[in-house]
Amino acid sequence: TQSTWGYRVFELEVIVPQHSLLIMSQEEISAAFKRLLPPHEIAGIVARALAEDIGSGDLTAQLIPESKVYSARVISREACVVAGMPFVAEVFRQLDPSVKLEIMVSDGTKVDENAVLFRATGCARSILTAERSSLNFVQLLSGVATATSKYVKLLEGTTTRLLYTRKTLPGLRLAQKY
Image (cartoon, rainbow, N blue to C red; front, side):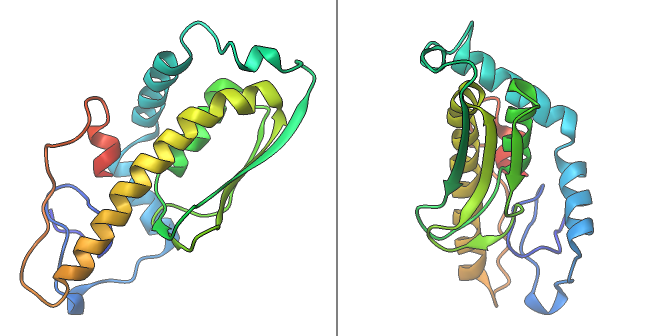
């Protein structure tokens, strides 16, 4: 399936000649993301990640008073193409839906160093517990998106097409390809 998006890996074929690229609205992009990786798939991937990460409980978070409220922000340490925000939202939803999560950039956005990606305000224990899994998703998926973007740029103006690979992490194939 060819993609009309020049900066993301979707399904089989990604690169199309530059003259045939279509401009897509944010709504069309969101709809395409949901078709490629529906919310129930994201929920399952996140549930497995949380089970592996915290198992029967987060002992470190238990050191923080239950009533303590924190505000945290996640920033990029270098320029990148952001990916994984639906996973961040799902991590917080599954752990503590009362945490106020503000996602500042959408997937596919190119950001500079020190860009604020998201903010979370709420129970300190919940934020601390959600932090590692959220960062794991954002770091991995933004790394894939950033590398893919570089390859797409290198291939611009050629007839070469960038194809997907089966070389993905077990349990994360759909996430790495979306």
